[in-house]
Amino acid sequence: MILLRILIRNAFRNRLRTGLTILGITIAILAFGLLRTVVSAWYAGVAASSATRLVTRNAVSLIFPLPLAYKDKIRQVDGVSHVSWGNWFGGIYVSEKNFFANFCVDPQSYLALYPEYILSDRERKAFLSDRKGFVAGRKLADRFGWKPGDTVTLKGVIFPGNWDFVLRGIYRGRDRTIDETQFLFQWEYLNETVRQRYPSRADQVGFYMIGVASPERAVDVAGAIDRLFKNSLAETLTETEKAFQLGFIAMTEAIVMAIQLVSIVIIVIIMAVVANTMAMTTRERIGDYAILKTLGFGGRQIALLIFGEALVITGIGAAIGMALTYPAARAFGSTLSNFFPVFNVARETLWLDLGAALVVAVVAAVIPTQRAIGIRIADGLRRIG
Amino acid sequence: MTTEAPAPIIDVRGVSKSYRRGEVVVPVLHDITFTIAPGEFLSLMGPSGSGKSTLLNLVAGIDQADSGRIVVEGVDITRLTETELARWRANSVGFIFQFYNLIPVLTALENVELPLHLSGLSRRARREHALTALDLVGLSHRLDHFPGQLSGGEQQRVAIARAVVTDPTVLVADEPTGDLDRVSAGEVLDMMARLNRELGKTIVMVTHDPRAAARAHLKRHLDKGVLSADDPAENPD
Image (tube, chains in turn yellow, blue):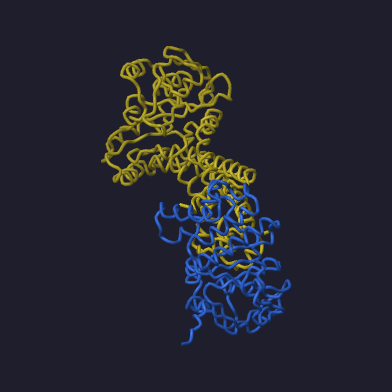
C-alpha cells in the first residue's frame, strides 16, 4: 500500500515531464488505434463474409461476364441452396467524387442470401414490385439526404447513359460490421435496357452469388460448379466469399503492410520516449531507492516502484488515447466514408492498444530497474545532498 | 567478587575495505578492530576521506567488508546474504543521515511508518508506533507535513523518529548535525543523548563537529583508514 502511494506520487513529482509523456502516449495510442482501425476497415468485407456463400466469376477475369443460362445448371449442383446474380454497375451520382458501390442484382434471391440487410416488409415489397426501384444503405441515404420515393439518376460508365431509379427502401445492417453504403437495383431493369441499347451484352451477368447448405460443403460445391463449366467458352472460378474479398485486398496488400508497419513504428518511438522518462526519473530517485534499501526494502519492491510508475504513466496516456479513438474514428470514418464504408473501432483494437501500452511500460522500465537495483546503497546515498 | 564486563554489542575484528577506481585499488580501511558495549555512545572522528563513513556503513550492514568479521548483537553480518542483510537492517539498526534522507513524497507520519511496513504489524499498530515516535521527537503537530514543508531541524527529528520506530538496539548516525544550524544541531544532539541515556540505544556517530563528538562517551579517530586507541570524550555537560 505504501509502495503504491509512493509510486503514484512519484509519477506526478515532475508534472510537466509526466504531462508531456502522457500526452505523447495519448497521441501514440490514438494514432496506433486509428491505423489499426484503418486496417480493420480494409478487411471489413472479409469480416462480414459468410462461410455459406460462394462467388462464381469468369475464370479469366472479373471484368468478363458469364452467361445468365449458368444459373439453372448451378442450381442443380448438389449442396447449392440459393443462386443469385448481379453486375457491378459503376454508375456516377452527379460527380465522380460522390463514389459509392452500386450493383444490379436479382432482388428476391439476393435478399434471401443476405439476411443481414434489414428492410421492412413494406420496403421489400415496394422494391421487388418496382422494376426501376432501388434500395440504399442507411449511411448512403443519409449522406445524400435521400428519402423513399425520391428519384435518383446515375450516369452509367460501363453501361452508358442516364439511368433513373426510385428509392424504395433504406436497409440497415444487422450489426455494425455490415456495409450500409451500397446501392442495389434490379438486374432485370439493366438487362432489359441493355437488350434494347446493346443487344450483344444482354443476358450476361458479372457474378453469381451462391448459397450452400453448410460451410463444410463449400469447397466441394465450388469444385463441382467449376467442373461443370470446364472447357466451355466462359470457364468459371468459384471461391468462398471470404477468399473473393481477400483477393481484392491482395491487390492493395503493400498499403496495408505499410500501415501496419507505421503503427508498429509509432509504438517503438513512444517506447523510446517513455524509456527516456523512466531513465531520467530513476536517475533522480536513485537516492530514494538507496534509502528504501537501507531501511530493508528489497529489489522486488524497488522494481515494483519503477514498473508501477511506468505503468501508471503509460496507463493514463493509453486510457485517454483509447477514449479519444472513438470520436476520432467517427470523424475519420465520416470524412472517408467513400473509401471505408465500415469504420468501427474493433474490440481487438482496444486489446492491441492495451497490449502495446503494457509492452511500452514494461520495456521502458527494465533498464532503469536494473540500474536502481544494481547500485550499491552507499553509492546511492552519496547522490543525496 | 569481580564485575564481568558486558559482552560487546558490536564486535569488529580485522576489517579491511578498499574501493576500485577503474584500474586503481584505493585502500580505505586497514585491519580495523574495536568493540562497543551495549548502551555506549561512540563518536568516530577524522579528516575527510579517512574512512569514517565507510566504517559506519560496514557496521550498519549497508556495505560489505573485503575481509574481517563484524558481529552485531551476536549476528555475524559479514556472513549474511543481501536479503538476510536487508532483513537484519530492518530489524536491528536505525539510521540517521546528514541530509535526513526522508522520502520527499511521503508525509512525516508516512516516513516514520515506512520501516514498519516490513514488520508485519497491522495498519493500526503501525500508526500507533509512528505517532509515539513522532511524539518522542516533539513533532506530533507536524504529522501531515511533507519534508519540503519542514525545517532542517524538524526533518532530522522526523529521521530520528524513523530510526527509532522499529526499536532497534543500535543507531548509526552519519554527520547528523552537518546540515543544521547551531540551535537545531543542539536539539538533535540532545535528542540523541536522551535516546542513549533513557532508552539505552547504542549509538555510533560519525562527525566532524567537536561539539557533537563531545556528547559521546567515547571518541575514536580514524586517519588514513587506521583507528586510534580509545579516547574518552570530555562531556561539556
